[in-house]
Amino acid sequence: MAQVNKKRYYYLEINIPDAVKDARPGRDAIAIMHDLTEEYKDEVGTKYARALNDFIFGTAKHYGWHPSDANRCATCVQFINARHFANYEAYTAEFRQWLNDKHGITYPYETYTDVPYDIADADNGNDAEVQSQQGNYFTYAQAKEKAIMEDLPEERGFVIA
Image (cartoon, rainbow, N blue to C red; front, side):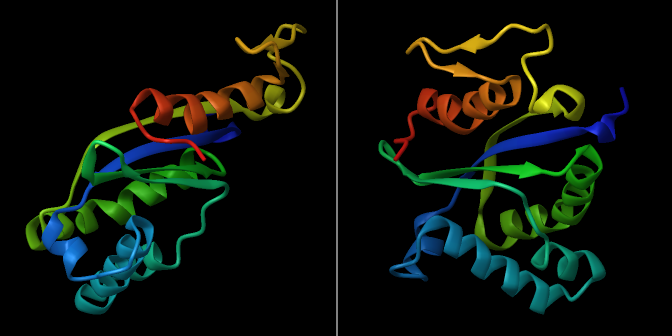
């Protein structure tokens, strides 16, 4: 199966230093990152900087600040397919370097998972239902989405609202 025939869920954690947070009082982590994306686009002005600023994600879930690490936040986004994710990676390479060089912002943890389209909304791929520890049943896609958008951040210490 081709790489492009899969949804991709991408989970990432970001460390934002106090100086960056203090310079933007009252802004949450995602708002700070949006501000910095805009600042980057205005300062650098490249095609990739503009594309990153206008990038559209599928589902996105933000987890706020980590309860025991006040500088760490996390988010999980869905990409249409692996090619969409590859574009995002190309757009963010220089941005990440700029964030680190200018603001000391780092990405200490990242992972992703793919969900093939041909079984994404049908079943788990072998005509059996997927059951959670709580006894709930899911399709394969729902189970994979829950694993990366809820279970993983919770395992990493974030509070799921």
